[in-house]
Image 1 (cartoon, rainbow, N blue to C red):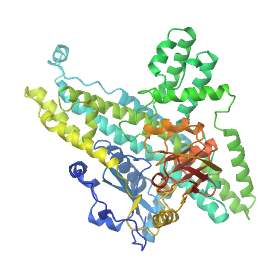
Image 2 (spheres, rainbow, N blue to C red; image 1 turned 60 degrees about the vertical axis):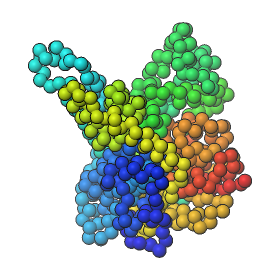
Image 3 (tube, helix red, strand yellow; image 1 turned 30 degrees about the vertical axis):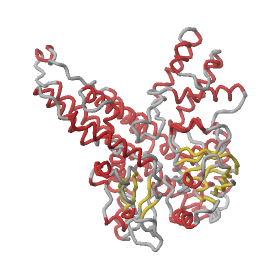
Image 4 (tube, rainbow, N blue to C red; image 1 turned 180 degrees about the vertical axis):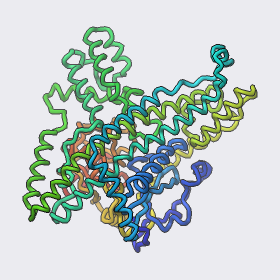
Length: 606
């Protein structure tokens, strides 16, 4: 993004103050995450897509690892011509990000030459390299699963001594911790190996369509790649399968709203048909229940395998749908037929064989690469990240057992640097027989930081900071977050007309629906959704797929045409408007609203 200062400007970063009483919690974040005066010259936006809640000291590792890998993929590996990596800052627990644009024509030309040698090879060998990618990710997952359990015995086991191992147990605490952290940073490099190329292929086709067909909508272009098959949809597919099997086995009456999963499973164990259903459940759980109830960036967004209440809460509704004869599957056949018709209709409008050949090549590439844009999330943000947080939990349990803080979960209020320091403190204490110094230090700090997180959550934060950039051409920022020059103009206009009953955003999925708005700020609130409600949120994530069976439409603060909310809405045929910037602030829970997904407009009717 250009750093040229525009006359139109959001609040400057320096105007955003740390909330009184939380200064020490803010200072705990590493120095390179803090805003400085120089940052006033740049544009930033609040990444509520991935970080919709204030981040604890340890959880910001998810941002640190992600942007380190994203920048490397953009800047050093594939060498995107017009953009480098993404900088990030944190204030009051909220993560703001800003892109680094390349604007010098000579440098763009130099980087374009590099990009063509690198990216085009990936496009030509996509299937082969993607198959290799899956093997790398599965190997990384198995390595994380195989990391040893933590133990500090009173005496080193005699068999270790007699085997001449020569390394005491305390060393392995540091060894396992560093491998855990290293594996997580490594995972993010795998995550971005293909992602920006996927966005780039789609963005190239998108730009071609916009120039060739000036009247075409963003949504129509997006529908030309709808109907995908990707692993991220499998967990929801498995729930539907389990609902059908419950009916076939005659155990569907056990699944009631509010029933406790453990109680249901105990009852199922007492019958042959129930035991068969549990066998089906076990088949689904490995690996498809390794999906978090969030989007993989917060330690407390546990996986379905860790907490079965989320998937079990969805089963009564799915069972009712099956009994009512309702179609539960995504209408893939319909989506595929519609997309082919659109592709053919627009192809017929082209004027030359050269244009048609280019069009064919670009849409074929988009279809080849696009499933990765969603599919990788299951392996990376969900399966692997869940393993990562659970291993850190083991360290939390060990440190809590030695009095460093009251609960294992308290470890997530330390930075990853502080966690290593606490581990070394414990290693030293175990080795020399003196009490560790951590118990006197960490409990008050943890309590202070917990209070800061709670206080930050009570305050809104601006959707963007700094001058509006002249040019935005980072494919991820445009396609995923929906940050375009036009959209920023809409956000600024919304601030200038706070009493307007219209909110504008991206036209993500067509259709017009009136309904009751249910403003959902955290994943813990999704159980408030009732059939026919309109979901209003910062952003959705893959594990929310079951709610798309009951809602009438979706509205999000952030997101572009390729955000998860937009993709899933199209896949389920629901109207959606994304990238509104302020929907969760302007719409009150329970208000009646109208969502026009074709125009990208939300109207507050009450």
